Length: 144
Image (cartoon, one colour):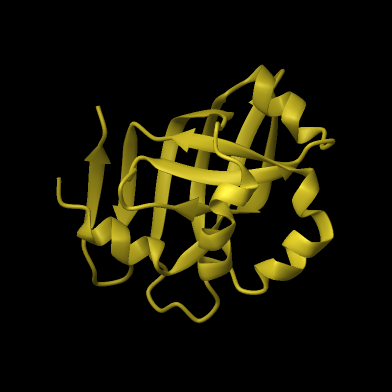
């Protein structure tokens, strides 16, 4: 599978708008994420262990997301997926910290402030719409 457009778009962002719904109540949160080329259908994010969001994640693990381009990124490239499976990860923040530090500006401050209280989640994507931005390619990647 050619994931070159996916790699290009991921390099322009480190945030997603994560959409959840429980009891017909929709909610959206902006969260930082990390991604690894060897697991192209998986995004990782974290949440504070005591956050009310964890109950929502556990109650309805069927979510949607869209990436938010970094400030100044031309063309508005993005990734979008629906019916994404959200679950707690076996990875820890210690496993993911090097990647967060590499891809999320100023993440060290977050880590220093709340790192010990973070729990890791995975977003498992089946179909991912990849839009390279204005004048660029668009495609849907299927991870079956």
